[in-house]
Image 1 (tube, helix red, strand yellow):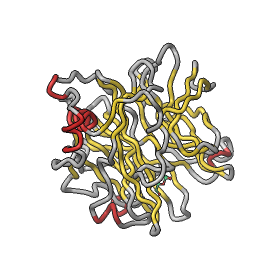
Image 2 (cartoon, rainbow, N blue to C red; image 1 turned 90 degrees about the vertical axis):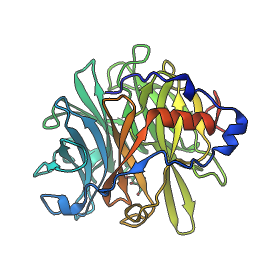
Image 3 (cartoon, helix red, strand yellow; image 1 turned 180 degrees about the vertical axis):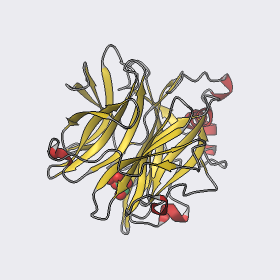
Image 4 (cartoon, protein in one colour; image 1 turned 180 degrees about the horizontal axis):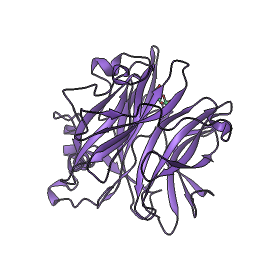
Length: 342
Ligand code: BMA
């Protein structure tokens, strides 16, 4: 549920001179909650290895629902719902897995299901969950619809391997559903958009944002984080960039803005990352140095974002940000562009 955000003129573009002065913001764009991590494996009602990378949404009663990726002690993942009145604590966690892989009917899920992104789709009056299905062919994108996070209509794999990091836009664009995803091709690990008349048949595939090259923080591999946020200026997209280092990968977050009516057009892309692993629970875990948001909720003010992210592939944390501040930062830290690459 992403209402369009009206922006005051104070947040219009700043000059290139200011841009250089504001590359590293003094005020963090996202503030970590003091209770972090808000969910760990110790909270779980059954034995697990880890809980991370949760999709998020607000339910009609105002509760926050997280659809968490839970890794069991075989190393395989399933999804489990946790509900809370304030989105911080007092979680009611389903006593059993909410959505398990079903390899008999869906062989693409033989090694589990991961990293759900939830989009509420008003036209369907349902939530669409795009998640990673994992099997011998590699990770692919699967889709399921639900009204209540108790029963699910599975659409099976909609993007074959190797593909992941997908979310559906909440409404049709020019009559077609639109899915952002991240296939890996000989071109690299870039973000693409595809369109469908019925959520089952997909085409008009286009690259929308390329991984940069060389020394950039987002060189070689990027992917969508949480579902795009609709604002009056465009679709605001958080994406992750992966920096390969001698001691492993670092997953950090960047920002980009895409045209509302033609979401394959990138209007702005931030130069630097704006959130990265710093807290101990982000720096150290099953996979060190990872922040990986799969969902956010928007407060009643229409501006405050509660960003839910997996930390070090071990636990779930929350950080608070402002859509206005993110757009203002993007203006100050990017070039306007119509190109997919920079
Ligand atoms: C990505 C995904 C995420 C994971 C991240 C860091 O490729 O598989 O699920 O959090 O790697 O391990």
